[in-house]
Length: 334
Image (tube, rainbow, N blue to C red; front, top):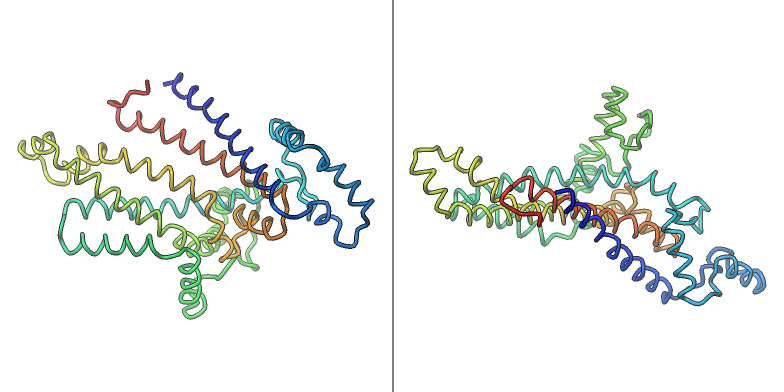
């Protein structure tokens, strides 16, 4: 197992190297002058030329990429063009919000998706099966930004049950320790703050969870149907084991293997694809930060944010591969 983890970890390096090349080349061919964006349109040509030289923009592309790669190796993502803050500091401040939102959305997706998939598989061709699969199809088809706006309109504007945006109410204070507001509220035993954080988290998490929930439900149903047809399941039933025990103890563990793949991929996608949800709900995470960087054409923000998201994605896939052998010992890590 240890050698497998080491091999998979080393395989991350060429993946991230390829990502860095793609990001650098895409930004290099994008129209616009970072020096002009930084200094403004009224800057003199001499000042612009000095800034380009300072940023290394006068060098050939391979030299610029070498400078970019050298900074990455040192975990130096540079400074944002607009705020002049360290990109790494901005990420450390904002990424906990994205992780918190993604974990909440993935919890909802896994909890309800797996339950729906199991019930649909055990009650195949029933009205519940048809309704859940239709709901899953609708969930996959609805754009996240449209659903977010509808949730805000109904539950925030009309009913007033949930706040429309942000992570915390203006009249609520939480002692910040980790930047994970839920965890910070628990550590400081600020139960009023915890309720407010969860209240702000609910609508964005629901909006972000719909597509993964639908995918997980359909994959769980498909996998469980295949497992339930196996001979050892028929043998377990013939021995007199109850339906619940057969499904949960014998079928579910084997049926979860492809589901874990989907969960891992969806969670990795969530960490980077929460841009629309964060923008709609004004959630101060990395997704909205990268979106603002694209609008402002802040190259350092785009480069740093994309590399961090890509790193998290490949790490999540590594964890999923390791979980295969943990859940099903019959799978060889060789």
